[in-house]
Image (cartoon, rainbow, N blue to C red; front, side, top):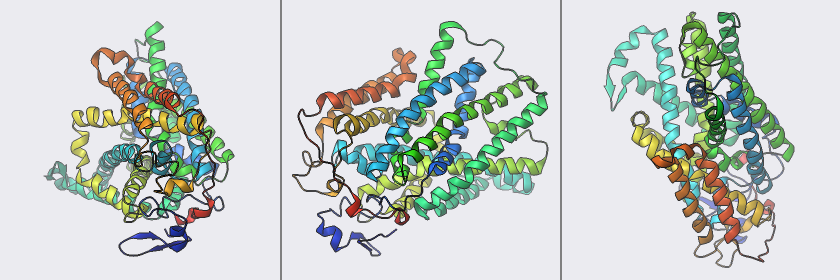
Amino acid sequence: MTGPGTTRTSETIAPAAPVAAAGLSPRLYNPDLAPTTAEGRRWKAYNIFTLWAGDVHSLGNYGFVLGLFALGLGAWQILLALAIGAVLLLGLLTLSGEMGRRTGIPFPVMSRIAFGVRGAQLPALVRGVVAIAWFGIQTYLATRVLTVMVLAVIPGAQTWEDASFLGLSALGWVCFVALWIVQVAILLRGMEGIRRYEAIAGPIVLLTLLALAVWMLVRTGTSISLSIPNPLTGGEMWRNILAGAMLWTAIYGTFLLNFCDFTRGAPNARAIRLGNLAGILVNTLFFGAIAVVLAGGQLAIDGRVIESPSDVVQTIPNTALLLLASAALLVLTIAVNLMANFVAPCYALSNLIPSKLDFRRAGIVAAVIGLVILPWNLYDSPVVIVYFLGVLGALLGPLFGIVAADYWLVRRGRIDVPALYSEDASGPYHYRSGVNWRAVGAFVPAAAIAVALAFVPVLEPFAPFSWPVGAALGAVFTVVTAPRGATYAAVSGEPIAVPPSAH
């Protein structure tokens, strides 16, 4: 991923003379962290739509919505909750995406604006750690699907399934490593490889899930249950509708932070708006309808509330069709993992040591970590999932509020992009020793309140609202503590930018 003005060796990724002469620090700059040039950007509306086509339909999201159905929300209540959440997300993601398009920079560099050239390691690493853990967990969940497929085709492989090592069967190890290699191979093609994969995976995912819903309607004669026998009503129903909407927003708290990793390759604002409109608003309602049909259909057939589309796939009587549907779920899981859990740690780790780790090398490091943490053991540990990843997840709201408010409300979008790569003590993003303690001061109380809302038992009724509350407080504290009367220069990063094809 070299670009103009850069050279690479086997040990380092060093700026060449023109870049060094521009006052850019090799501890802050490499070609993958550099801004993208305006020319050559290829993340158009269709690509952004297909990004969401996969992620919205993730198995985890289906589990969330099917949980709302089991809780007692009916079809129209679920669709209303998703619609409210999608409208809120549409606005927030458009703002987040536009930040990336205007500056051409990835999230760790974007964080330098509010937190400082050194302080930016905090938000970048929080986002990266969460993503690495979920990369491993999602790969493990895909492994379970692949294991079922292998056993359906090769029943004799059951002997491998019966032998285990470090908590995973021998067959599970083979399937996990195979999926791990596939994802790393895609990542090694850079952001362009991810864009191409998502462009193909999106339609496959949508058509497969639509086919499952149609098959369910045929099985039930279009007579499905629109709710469980004793649905929620009155105030409790409306509280859960609003809670569902806020939780739907919180699910994308991770991606709200680093959407700029993708939109830095968008050619214009229209691509972001149209891609988000189709991918977030329209696609979310389509997703909700699919979930309602699958849940209501299975409930009408045998009185069972399913937990995932894979529960429906397993009832397909034809082995060939079952394998095709299962393969589509694998395509879906890989698509989700690449965009939600792989790109972010690549940039976060590269931001730690830019001279040593480019996007690809950082991706390999992240993938290895995702393997050695033995994610199947993490997934089976409620303590790890609920407290470790839960606490880190609760921190994402305040981080988004601070980064977004600083960009839009404090600086009004006026960013000196080249200065984000400078260690000059008089630079606008050096603050005190590279850290903006105002941002840290805004983060600590907002994060403490968000974590308390999420985990303190007496505050449990407010837990679904921890992300929006944390984000709002982070934004308010940022605006209130911002220096008064400050002026901000807008300087283009085009002179130090790298063509998108080089990332």
